[in-house]
Length: 198
Image 1 (cartoon, rainbow, N blue to C red):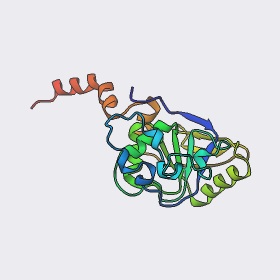
Image 2 (image 1 turned 180 degrees about the vertical axis):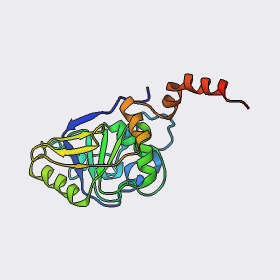
Image 3 (image 1 turned 30 degrees about the vertical axis):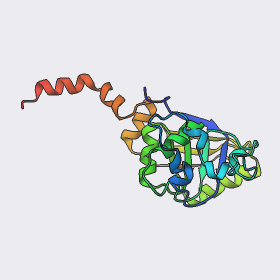
Image 4 (image 1 turned 90 degrees about the vertical axis):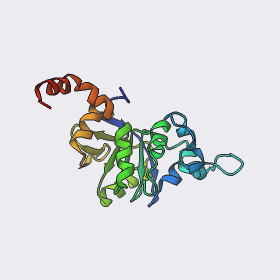
């Protein structure tokens, strides 16, 4: 199994109301040397989190102890820039299982879906409601249901549906990456191969 199954996530959220967050800001290029998915979370938003002497910047949200949770809420056009899959790896390795925004770069969205991070695209109006809810109370919880394709602000009950590719949805519900999916239907493939003439 590539990652833990994703069905329903109920958690607080970390707000990052910045538009056009690109992959070089998510994980700077100098940290792309490793080929395994481990360790990238240490350098998520590295240049925003730390000063040049490696001391944490107190004004950055990930260094603020009042913000916690497995949902990252970003501004419009999250994940733009280069196609590096390490950006999604860093988000996952840090501990986020879901990123909410009003728009995602296509390649970043795909990279997230391949490793078990759910990119939830909502309307600009609903995104602002999420930011407002967190601003009013950082302990506000949200519920993201993959099976129902909904995200809910629990305190108010406000909810919005989101779209997702059915194949990627099924994989996330089962904790599959593309290879896991093929292995899961291996017997079907073998049967088809036997019954299909060359």
